[in-house]
Image (cartoon, rainbow, N blue to C red):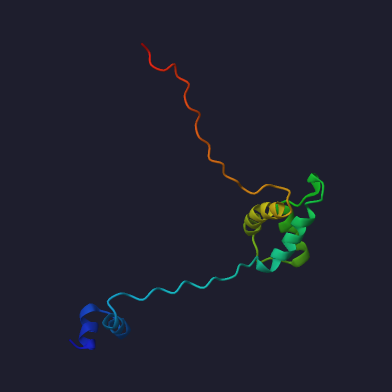
Length: 123
């Protein structure tokens, strides 16, 4: 069959027919390019605030709401939402505390159940 007849029969374009004739297996798909977040330009500022909070008294530390309000006031960051800031702060605060040695990294210790202390066989 000609390429045009294959196109009509299967309802596909000429590129699809050419690719099928070239190889029976389809080519690997390209991974989609990662697009940046709208929060990217403020990450450094937020990290600086969270690092400064390491030495601040507990009541004076930044909450996610306070960080969001400061971004709106000082940087006019109307393109970021509270939820974006909240998710970033929730993960990044812990990472900064671990890097500073203020919090242990997650460790997993498998625990084995204690052997039952039965009476043995009942006679």
